[in-house]
View 1: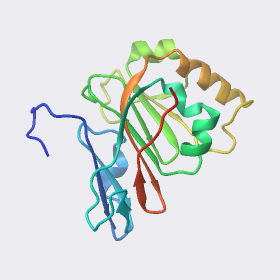
View 2: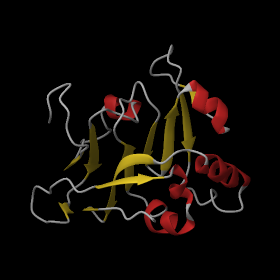
View 3: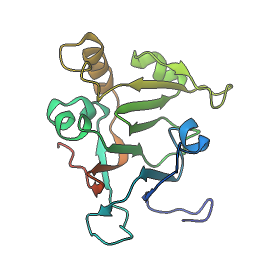
View 4: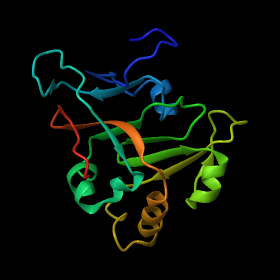
Length: 182
């Protein structure tokens, strides 16, 4: 953990354990955090094995429409367990991207929202905030090539600039790096 305000390399902390019920409200209410912990219920081992797996993640710069690429979606999105978060800018001042639970979530400023062309809602976390939240069900079997909502989302996301993100995938309680297409 770094001191508040200290510069550090982007990181993704993966904690395995059990909530003994529902996740804490702070985890459920916020899709984004400046320092991120992905909480994964259950027991498991990282790629390196052992009782305390090291953080395993991929740092990549990708276009947001990569999550709708058929090959990438078939391998990484639809099976579940994909976690991604944009890194770099502070969450409360810049556009962000998150993938968790099969949903792509974008938090975008008013100017980006107006130009993007995707439906969303105004942020409820900060009522006076100019940010809008957009959620796309990218793991849904109905959200696929040929579907009007999918085609619209793919076209809109292709217009966005590439984003630097942290990514990890959990398969059978094992944490894996994510390979993105070039």
